[in-house]
Length: 311
Ligand code: NAD
Ligand code: MLT
Image (cartoon, rainbow, N blue to C red; front, side, top):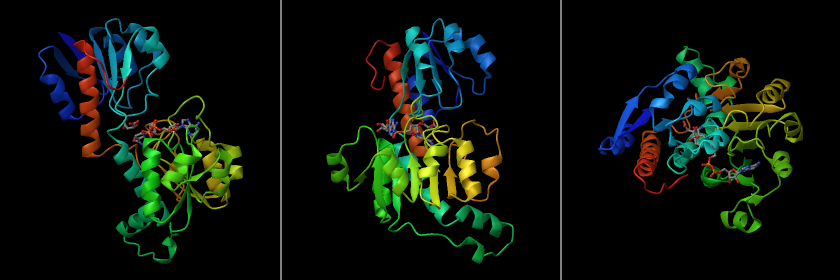
């Protein structure tokens, strides 16, 4: 028998995959503090997480029976991959299941930001009829700059073109041929920063992408730029974003992810030109079902000696 710890909530469709197997027992214990997880991890052969649980080196060092960590989502920045590799623990994720959900959320945020929908909604709910205060801007003919044209960035590009936006993208793996095929303008990082009216980031959080949008990047941007981060807190330097918004360089920002989650610093959230959601990019019924099934299938495969699909 293999013991699996579900440390963050995962859709029951995924758990059904595991519970059908006679070889595994699943223990659901969400909300463990790091010390508790460290003390209990040696009981388990597999660990299932979303983004809340931080699987640090300290935890991995105590995980003497752990064979696999399953991340029900894309980003694996909450897992110490070097430590896992060192201790022979395989890490699997679910790279495809929430692409659509994250792309739709990004477009919803871009549109809500442009038309100040959250602010106007809040005013009206508080019985204030303030039409002239909430004049928006149109997306048509504006340039959307996409930093990171992977699965989600690509889906955002297609949707933005549907809104009649011009789309420009930077990704180290993007070729001019691929950009042309997609109807996207091919640019360097700085070209995108200088030409975009809206900038949305869709890279993973890596050493190379941490604070890639910092004070120098804001300096290069157009006045009144709109900034969107539905990827990972930390890709955009929040202090630099705050300064850009307060100085009037940036007209607004839409943020789904923060450097510290749940938030520690309220400054950005308190600005009226910032709209925000609490890391909801992948929070659709469909995406949660997809990622749970994908990751649970891989965990079961590995424990029972089969190959995994998403190492
Ligand atoms: P992906 O791997 O398909 O795409 C990432 C792209 O970023 C790749 O094309 C890669 O070449 C590019 N990239 C890497 N380094 C770069 C750099 N320095 N500059 C520019 N581009 C760079 O991943 P994806 O499925 O599109 O997801 C992207 C990220 O979105 C995930 O890593 C995750 O952190 C985040 N995400 C967030 C939510 C949410 O709930 N808000 C949901 C899903 C994914
Ligand atoms: C992801 O990387 O897939 C997202 O952060 C979604 C999530 O786990 O909530």
